[in-house]
Length: 238
Ligand code: ADP
Ligand code: MG
Image (cartoon, rainbow, N blue to C red; front, side, top):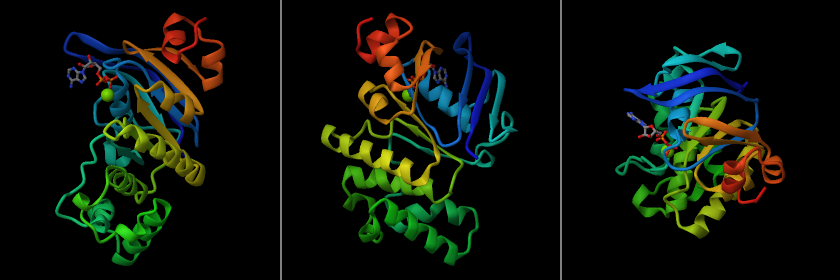
């Protein structure tokens, strides 16, 4: 369902090779975290997978099919951003339903999918509120709800918690992990926060200047960092 393969993928902006060349396999159902310092190319890599940017070279395969030239809507992925990007004048219900309305789904189907998503995200009691009547964490859950109703093969998260305060971040981290256990859908999660990476990931991809320094489980990276950059970033001296 939600496997993603990058083959020799590169991205050049002007004269700057932001991603020189990346090979990566993401397995169906995996929770994969891209971690690395600000500006290392995490968002760019995610946007290439999403189709929001075109690759300069290489190939992207999603669910066994070549996706390199597919528009974002045809890739079967849902993206959750750092800013909630909710429609302020619409209710929570309408915000979550929005992608389904755009896709021309029947009202009965929309109502059921919205109710299901709201239950999973503990938003059932908030469906008639406007975004301004919600806490930051609730707003982020609405943004996730909007991604869930499309029943994607994979979710792409770009620093979804960085606008939240520390206590709420810990909560939402748990909630997203629980969501992954429930849905068993592939999740690709970008963060510059080592703790998020170590606590949420099945597999961590450590990026530095557009290159992969190491791929491994949190334990592998912690106990056997390949180099000083990884050791320093994960926080264990070699
Ligand atoms: P991260 O998400 O890891 O902070 P980004 O992927 O946003 O990093 O950016 C990686 C590099 O690519 C940065 O040097 C950034 O300035 C550059 N970059 C990103 N998007 C563009 C763009 N549209 N045009 C030119 N340069 C860009
Ligand atoms: Mg970014």
